[in-house]
Image 1: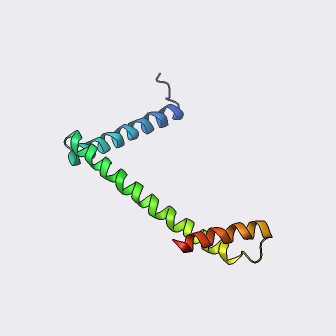
Image 2 (image 1 turned 180 degrees about the vertical axis):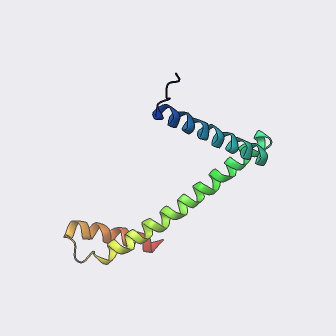
Image 3 (image 1 turned 45 degrees about the vertical axis):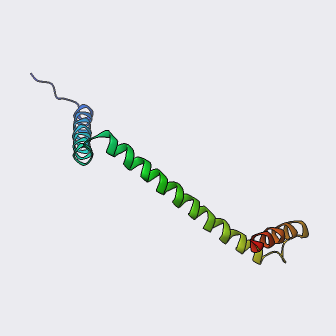
Length: 95
């Protein structure tokens, strides 16, 4: 008599098979688009340059907006914090 295979084992084998098929498809796609390592390294280098530049511009905009918003509340904050924020706003406006 043949024993029944536990459902847990069947699901694990099925999941592993699907994962292997997905990995094979991704590897095929990768190697179709990038035939040599030089292209991959160059693309990642350029991507890193753009990522760094975008991060710098984004951080500058966020800090400028934050300082502007805090500058609107300098009159309502305690004197030490308000005075410090006013100095920051003045320094930014001079440049």
